[in-house]
Length: 205
Image 1 (cartoon, rainbow, N blue to C red):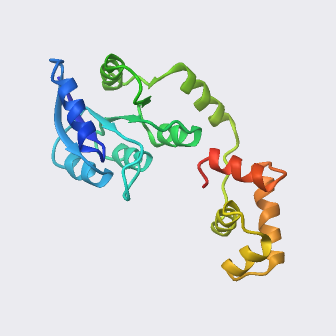
Image 2: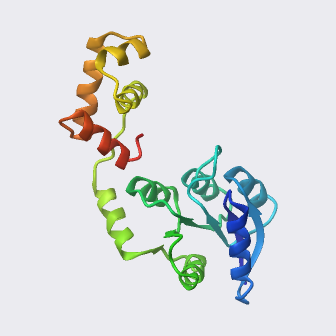
């Protein structure tokens, strides 16, 4: 019997999954949680084999953060991400956090069930096209911005010019220009639009 914990902030989705798993004798939903924090509290009280977790869970911990926290538990269960979001940076973050797999919610019910069984057996579960993207992401140098560079980038994304950014962050325009040079170098971008596009795809915005 594979014991499941469902983690999703949408009750109707959890209800639908519970109804689905009732059709399989080897699957048992032993708990539900609407947040990563609730999931961790549950796992401290009851053993689980697989955590089926959404990526975005409202105001608290996201799926990647929840996965990382679960992975640090004694005898941790496998975490399988089930979500509608397929940004490369988010997929990579979950896998790096220790997720056993990443599924999109448009897959068939049979795929979800088979993936849970594979995750419980310790196998990595992911569609071939997502696997290729994750591997490509792992090969790319990781982009890390400083706190101030991130603040400048966020202002840039609003369409603000250097003067407006300087005023908002209480720095000089020269300082803003210096930060932009560093941001462009790290993102390998030549224009503001390109920098914003690349930062968004990498999950930096």
